[in-house]
Amino acid sequence: MIRKILKYGDPILEKVAEAVTAFGSPELHKLVADMWDTMYAAKGVGLAAPQVGVRQRVLIIDTSVGEDESKKLVLINPEILSKEGKQVGEEGCLSIPGFREPVTRANQVEVRAQNETGETVVLTGEELLARAFQHEVDHLNGILFINHLSNLKRDMIRRKIKKLQKAGEWD
Image 1 (cartoon, rainbow, N blue to C red):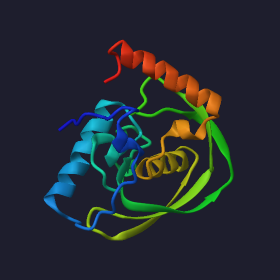
Image 2 (image 1 turned 120 degrees about the vertical axis):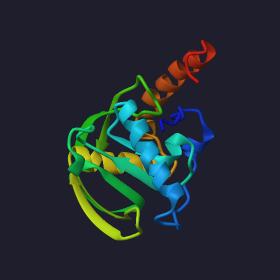
Image 3 (image 1 turned 60 degrees about the vertical axis):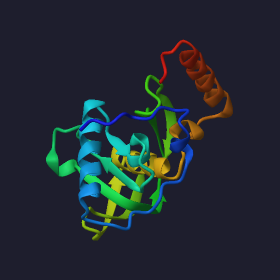
């Protein structure tokens, strides 16, 4: 089932998500399945549970955008263990549609998380996958990609969004 993606301005997006403690439950399975449907419908690379209104530490990533099943990742209660290097690349967000800006991130990231059954997994990502790990974990911590921009850029985007809200074009 495709869920509504919350947009910038919704307070849930700026709150820290809660740890998942019940693994293998039908509710968790349904959330993850719905997140896949929602992310693919929006043509995204990653999605965090708070973006669909669920304050739980669950995220999904597929850098192949549905082209390669082996690239599908479900990370529950993820934490970044290490970051190395630096990359600058254009970033966007399903919760801030229509806006893309260059963001500096680590080029290699190691993440520890749990899978849907609660098993611990440790993954290393480089380039796009490293960027996706950092972007989605930020969501679980109530941080949006625009928080990584200069005050001037961030304020410019906020003003544009306020205009869209007044015009009824940002729900």
